[in-house]
Length: 209
Image 1 (cartoon, one colour):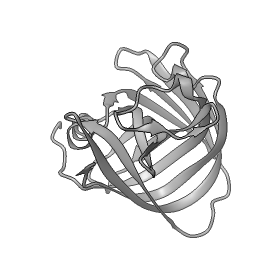
Image 2 (cartoon, one colour):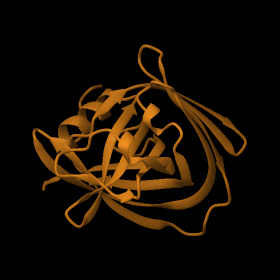
Image 3 (cartoon, helix red, strand yellow):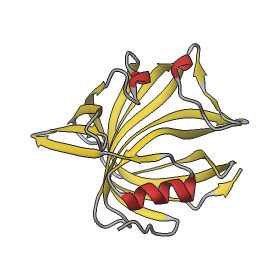
């Protein structure tokens, strides 16, 4: 099924994120009018494994990398690399919000409190692999919100993301294939890892900038 739902998308699932300090000179190109928020010679980057579960408008798995950026005075997130295992998600992400999704195959194995993730391209080339080990979750459900900025049909568009979830610290390891599409993160310093458990996420609607 390649048809995708109209925005906003209401999604639910599990997200496992790590925040990194990455050499700013190694960053992929960002949309025009955006610049990375720098900490000296480094920039902040997030990588995440996501499982969008049944109960939302689509169910699929995802791997992404995003850069904390700035437009004027406002902090934004710009997704530079992203893979999904759903044609509908790929088309919707590209056509609704300018998110540059590609297809990948995912393998997830569970072993006690740990999950082992692997993402490979459709021709079998490794993109990344990682392990997420859960720690004790914080009480309650927590709101979060941010705006994604992407290039769509030559225009910068802003898409709001609003979620509510349980927060869970994690211990995460990542391995990015040398020479692969996320090789620019190799050697970066991880700052913090955590999970948004049982999240409910609203994506969109977009607006021009």
